[in-house]
Length: 208
Image 1 (cartoon, helix red, strand yellow):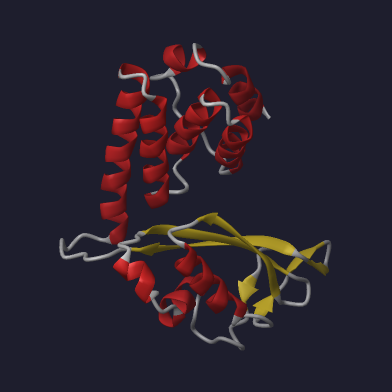
Image 2 (spheres, rainbow, N blue to C red):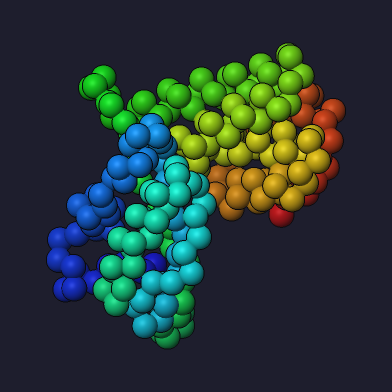
């Protein structure tokens, strides 16, 4: 059973609404023009407290600190998860989009999707046509900053990481991709991917 915020302790507020209402956008982040989707993982203990914070996707260190600060303020306000009728520690994850100078009338999700698609296309061109793995890696990483749950971006960044010798980073991306569940369409790139290093490791992770 998933953890939920205790409505008696925090009436009418989902976690996302609580974060939106209580987070102050760091001034330094504004000056550095940092935007993207922040993802924080944490543990809700059997006692309803929060601990073990882990940044899955960082927009910048100032936003990391601010997200964790506000999350810590929910300490003791959680209903724990249960296993076989007993309260247990459980891992939870929350994401929040931070966007600057949005005067387009579009939502942050729409803007970030457009930017991520552009980065994905640029990454594929640099990887498969120009064979510039370094630039492709930067493209895919830029896309993941906007859409950190995108499995296609995780797949391709992992391939770039493996190609430059970062096998551990590649496996982290692929394991993350696999953990998100569902399917991923690879047919368009199968022939190209099969010729790259790390293909066997990728297939092993997906099959698991």
